[in-house]
Length: 421
Image 1: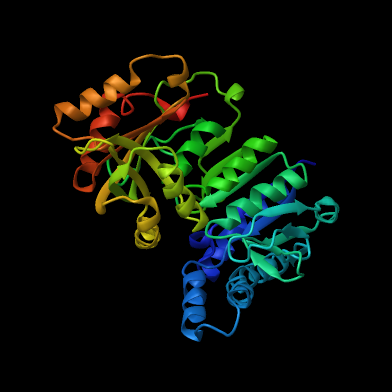
Image 2: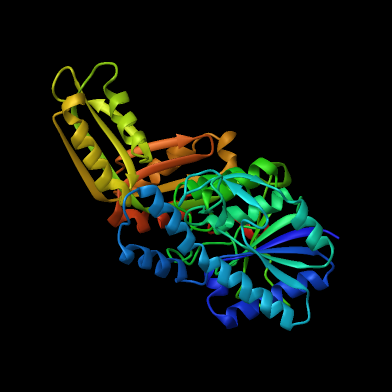
């Protein structure tokens, strides 16, 4: 019997009717003879409600660490409820099922409560349980820290839990059930020409996740790539007896035909910062980015340009919009030490990226992108690249139009992406 992991997101277990629908998908796989472990998120909106309760409870004294630990104890309860309810539904259908919490697996994490990283999973007990015919319903998003307390993995952590468990038990694949029926050439809400992709590589999916695609959490894709765990993205809103094919995320070698560009991905959660008149000498840039790193602020798309004043430079970078105020505060505190003269910020920006394995071996991808945007009068503020990605920072008001322009420029509305592979 093949071992598989099935993960259901918040919208897929939003209420008892949705949990019963998820149970029908699980039932199909068990009846097909598979050994099944299921990972569940909290019901849609439940984690936000629990986070709000933590905020309303106020700051406990005296240590911030104490707040982080109790925060985890509260917000992890959402997944505990869902796992128990799904186990009850499966039992009522006549199957042997039980809930598993993170500490029971055990899924071991580091000490970073609220944003913990997985250190180790001992998958032997879980594997033996599902091979015996038990359906293991695992609470996602949580594990156990070295202090013996519950630790949560941060937003989207249930995806990471699912892939990590799949790797630990040697699962044949990990199926992620959500409210979309696969990965698309771009956000279908932005253009009706978006097409579902049949297969996409780990590398492409990782780039998509890193620039704002909401389909999978970045760390889950990293784990899938590291341990070569095939991941399928499927819709839990399809009929359980006639599910769609979804999108398979797999190794590059398993994809027969590589498209030059596979997706156009927008990220509207961006802000830019420009630091003006930084002394143009060694150590100044290091001072800026060391201070931001110490505050755990992620930055991207760094550009340095000459200032109008001789001996000075301007440095621009992007960060997530939610980090902008903290970034500006950190830089204000560091201004006397670094010696820059002024800084400015802009929330009305967006990042648009084109991603594709074929960029490795085809010239002209950047030229097509810049020409298409220029012809439509869309100005580019910053540019960053990787081996299979080109990202541009533009005015947010033009972002949706830019996505449609680029989707058309690369022929993604005509490429039979659903048949790719």
